[in-house]
Length: 217
Image (cartoon, rainbow, N blue to C red; front, side, top):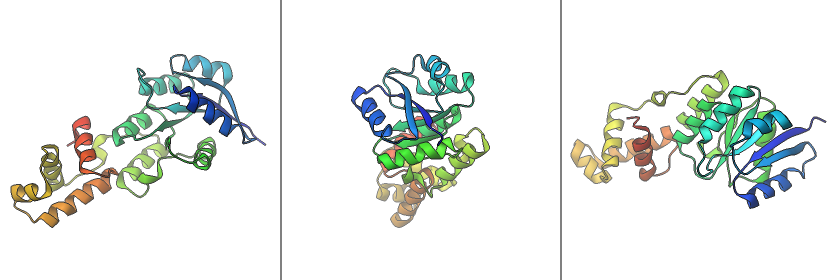
């Protein structure tokens, strides 16, 4: 039986120890080391030679993308799974772009985590289930499988959808947007739904935040 060697990088000690203990209940997973930050991550990789790094994506005062990039540069074969509670599409794009092999939500079950570790170890890629079926998921999945960089222009919006997004950013309601664009309110709702579907978002606030952060539109 092949034992998967794991390095955990998580700044919350209680969570870090808890993850370690839960994973080590599985005979084919061994936590070879753990860290509270990513400052000396490369040294740990070279010393303990893990197969997979489980990396907290929300650590304070850490440029996690740079941590991922440095690990991949020094140890190209290392596999990295990011962890987070509410990642934005921009977060995951950056993580994948830097070389990560996937992302799992911190509210996932232990079974989901173990399954993800096995899948990545075997060469697969993992992304949060809520994104499954969305255009964004397909774009990221394609980039992961092909090893290509992800362009923020890969998610294509129609001219009308771009107009709706811009007005959402301005704080307009569906009714106000309908008046501004001289279209029916139900048409606005349809555009908003399509935008959420394409970006795997769940609210107008998330659309506004994503647009501001990415300047993608």
